[in-house]
Each structure stands twice: as C-alpha cells, then as structure tokens.
Length: 115
Length: 110
Image 1 (cartoon, rainbow over the protein chains, first blue to last red):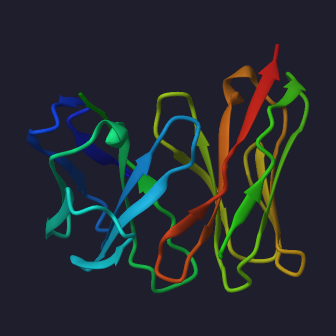
Image 2: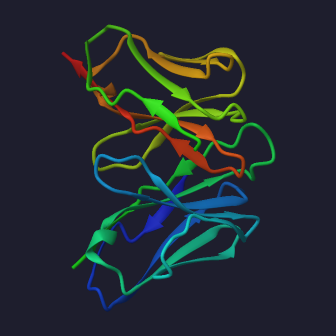
C-alpha cells in the first residue's frame, strides 16, 4: 500500500482565518514532507520531518506552522495567509533517508485558495 | 547551488513512438534520482527511481543514469496518449529532500 491521504481536498480561507491541513500515511515511513506547488512550477520543499523531528525548514514564513503528532500524521497549521499563498499543498512520505534509496510518495494534495 | 535541469518542452511524439526525456544535475553528491509523472491538476506520481549507473527497466519505462556525465534520462516505449503529462526529474538531496527540475511537458499525439 503506497497511499498517502490528505484532507481537505479543497480549502478556501480568508486572510484572517486559521485552518489546518492534514496528512496521513500507513506505510511505516519515518520521514514526511510538506511541499507547495504553484501552477506550472515544480514542487517547492517547505518542511521535512524525520523520525517525528523537524529536520528541514526551508525559510518558510511563520504563518505556516508544521506539526508531526506521531509517525503517521503530519499537520500544517495556517494563519493570516496572503493571497500569494494560494497553491497546491502536497504531503509526501518516505523511508528515513539513511540509504541511497528513499523514494517519496505524494498524497493527492490540498488545493488552497486565500481570498 | 544544487540544480536539476530539464528541457521544459513541450515534447511531442506520435503514438507508438519512443519518448526520450532528459535531465542533468549539478550535485555530484546526489546518489538517487527519481522520475515523477504529473497530470494537470493532480499530484506527482512516482514512476521510476535509479541510483546505480546504467539502465533500469520497468515495463515500458527505462531509466538511465550516467554519474560521470551527471545525466539522467527516461525512455518511454510505445508511447500512449495517456502518457501525456509533465515529467519531473528529481535528485536526492543530502537530507532526504528532493531537488526537482522544472519538468518536461510530454504530448503523445494519436
């Protein structure tokens, strides 16, 4: 089973709202990722969690706050977003990167629109 | 700056032909390379990964890696209209992150 699930599929929020994106995997993976993807661009890494600890934060604004409650779950808390934050938010998971092969599997994404 | 370069295309091939997608990378420390297929409005789907020099085949897909030339390619044999998508090449970074190329848009004409 190579499934990563994400909820919600679509989200529309105002600039003063607080919302959360959720991601879940049941593949026994120990690394999880958040990416942001704008139209006609490749995915852009935001955060990496390895063994439930934040290992990479790609200088993401503090209005994005990640959380990894356990090895299967990953959340992204959103607050005071800007219209330019509208994008497809992708979650991915992989085995922990301790060897040469750590292919990442992506969830279906959450399409976020900030009004 | 670690980079992965791809020709953005579009690459157009007739149905049944071989589609050849290429990318180059700058980081000699990268050990693993990945090809993802992304349909419009959907998330990336992993189709191949390779970490040894040479060829790796899976059905109609063949990935090729040449570490000396820092070159990765994906061949799609007997291309079908359903293969029309954007193909993303990615190299593995030192912390498990992926470094993506900008993607090549492939169009397979019936």
